[in-house]
Image (tube, rainbow, N blue to C red):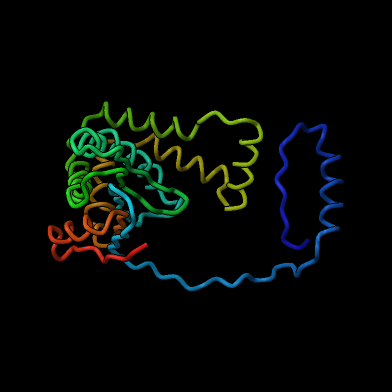
Length: 243
């Protein structure tokens, strides 16, 4: 079939038989037109502030910032910044002091989105304030080189998580299909390994503090909590929608 692709993981000695079987499968599939374009709906990101009312007793709060593509030199450092925010600020302020089940940060290098969030959170407006405080904390450099080292180690713990042979093959297949070549992935690793305190301060200022107007907020909570939070948020109130 035109455009069909397979990812096969196995021992080299078995590949010849696999190729023959896949060729037969391809011939049996319905044909298609090679290079046929798939229509894509137009998309333009717009910052929003949504409060999604649902039958839940606590809140789930997220703020998402647009950042940079995978191949950008800052992509690796943003992975480290996410680990730094989680371990150095958000866990303490959202879970230990705020009583939420968890508070975290993540950077999606493939999507170019940086997220901070809480889940099973008894607070809402306070947590949005903590997100802003965390960004300013990182931009001000109120952390040491040991914390940077721990964040770097956390990134590589994720990047180098042990996988089965099938898992490695599946990951490589997905990366190749997205154009994430070994060279591009090594660039992200190099960026993470080379992260410095000063560099992380710059990233926090550029993408989280100065980039805040471009960010989006989404909250899932019960309607009473959303309306109560809107009284505190004022001009930054959430647009409430019922799920």
